[in-house]
Image (tube, rainbow, N blue to C red; front, side, top):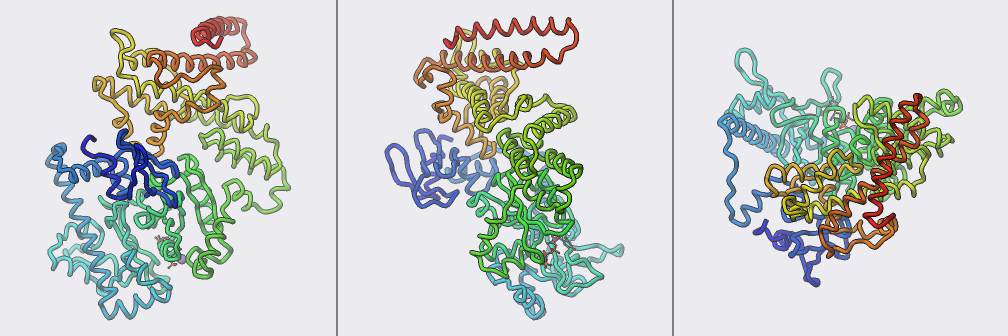
Amino acid sequence: MNAARVDEVVGEFVNLKKRGVNLLGLCPFHNEKTPSFTVSPAKGIYKCFGCGKAGNSVNFIMDHESLSYPEALRYLADKYNIEIEETVLAKEEIEQKTERDSLYILMSAAQKYYSERLHEDEEGKTIALTYLKERALTPKTIEGFQLGWSSLGRDDFSQWAIKNGYNREYLVKTGMSFETEQGSLFDRFRERIMFPIHNIAGKIVGFGGRILRSNAKEAKYINSPETDIYNKSKILYGLFQARKAIRQRDEALLVEGYMDVLALHQAGIEHAVASSGTSLTDDQLRLVKRFTDNITFLFDGDAAGQKAALRAIDMALELELNVKMLLLPADHDPDSFVKAYDIEYVEQYFKDHSQNFIAFRIGLLPEDVLRDPIKKSEIVREMLNSVVLIKDIIKRNLYLREISKLLDFDEKVLNDELRRMAASKFKKDNKAPDLTLAEPQVISQEQAIRSQATAVNQEKQLLKVLLLYGSRMYTDDMTSAQFIYRETSGMEWENDHCRILFERYREATEQENNLADVNFLIHDQPEEMRRFVYDVITERYQLSPGWEKFLRRTVVSPDANYKEEVKSAIGYLKFTKISKIVEENQKGVALLETDEAIDELFMLQQVLLNMRKQLAVELGIG
Ligand code: UTP
Ligand code: MN
């Protein structure tokens, strides 16, 4: 980290100009005309005020070059001539790794072979290239997606591969060849347009092969099987080519077919990807989430497409993706649509017709359903089943409002039902109930933001003092971190990010003897998390008016005594948590049936109230 100076590392990709103590340039992660990408050599971090990306040298390389954490370290080590000792691999691990490498090499050779057949062989040129031209694909697209052609012969490829020294075992393992009982090889792909499938590092892991003319006897597409290098549920077709556009647009467009991806990219809609040869999986959506939080589904309007869409919505919501749905005019698929209209029209259409999932579902319903109260309430329940998957309370409320508005349903009733569902879902998942769902009335968006902000801000404040002062001594024999752990043991966190980071930090300090620092904490975390940490330690939230107002006193200045900060962070957090329990107990009394139960709760309540009073005095907010 000391060698890989952030200004040097970033400077290799971004033209940076000096501006005060910082450097300034155009952000490489989004399109901007006025530079707002700052690099602070002193802090060792970059921060973009346009798109909010932030991180250190390693994060930058990971993001910019789409490398994993270890890959980025190797990259930097190489750049600065630092030797890194990697864990020595066991013998089987080396064998496994070399085998995987061999499979990659074979797939890459196959791609070159098939492309040559397409561009050099008479048969390829007259039959396949002509076909691709009929489908209006340009040489640039054919090139960019490395399309190819597999010839008619039953073992042309296998023979070529053996002749060129490729191991027959790997031919069979990759599924490129079948082996007969007599031991002869024949090709999986024959007489097909070849679509190489890349992983996000750009390595080819499999192929899809499209037959030229429809033929009832054979499948339109044949795909490579699952192999050691091709895990179908974790690969999205076109993601390698789409990843830059997905980042820039901060959105991914999910379509159904290979051909759709090609046509969209060719038209300039380069954030399109497809799940190849399988129905969409959870892992594929996680892959998308590495690049963006926003996903738009562009499914066919037919019944199968609709069913796929509903499944996809729930999966995406559960991963906290923001979901939009897009339907094309009847009789169109993305491929035909972009060919029928110019790009301005298409982009405008996409913009105008993207719907949230509530509006999309309602749009699918036949008229009479909405006039039948029983059917209508079934629909509402179905939609609430999706809404309950959303963890963000503000978003959840916005969707409730949408349902209430579009279906003319009372928001309070919806909210009650949602809470009931949440409770039983949590019971089923065996998780603690979500406190945000225990609020009795429909809370307005503003209230939601406010109540969320105060509790969460306090958790952030605590995290901040932990990160900044954790290693300093709080008393003679206790670090600030140890003090914080002791005071918060058993506490339930409102904010998942805070909880995760707090736990990570604690595990690290407990094991490594206080070696944890911010870089350690976030090195392998997703972008969102890193941004979160930088926001926390650069105290953007802390100076927000809400915070100050809530505390009814001046925000502690960053220069103040750190022990004071640690102490007050703990104090405020406890104060809010206790207040929350006190409130819940008040509401809970009505549900208790026996006198003993009421007495017990009352005793607990008095303890809590005393604690709260004490804290208020200490904090000067009594
Ligand atoms: P489509 O039939 O819509 O294919 O299937 P397409 O990509 O639009 O191709 P064209 O326009 O007919 O040339 C959608 C996707 O479903 C998978 C493929 O991934 C295909 O791209 N599929 C389809 C198969 O895996 N096998 C098949 O037999 C058919
Ligand atoms: Mn098609």
